[in-house]
Image (cartoon, rainbow, N blue to C red; front, side):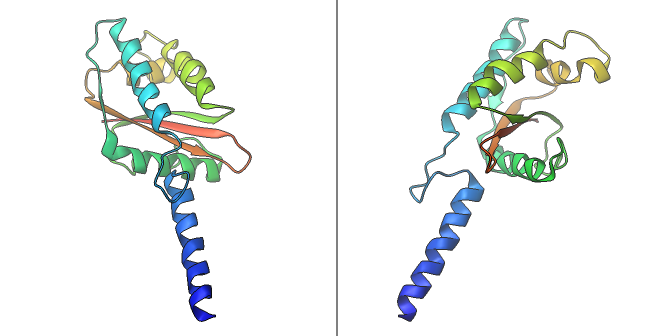
Length: 155
């Protein structure tokens, strides 16, 4: 009987760890694997329209970016966890209905803020187009209501 209880507790702990890490199940599958790839590709496609070199995908920064998106969603506040991953700049798409809406809608609206030098008006565009950054990590978190929060960390 004790053995079954311990197994049930361990299974529950594993489920919690996988849910927190963005994994779908115990296989380690990443629910947002394709979204991360598309996010980086979209940012680089925007950059290419202006002859700006592509950013590398910051794979090792993705788990931390996921956690920042999670923290922001739980706080109900964009950028509340900014800087925890060592990023220099961050854009965020808070509470969007789908990954497609984030990739095709939110990222597009941020790019459409530019060009311009006034950071308070053009900040998202400035982050996406800066030649000061070499890589980007796209983090995602799905709330219990099904909304998706996404951060794009630049370094």
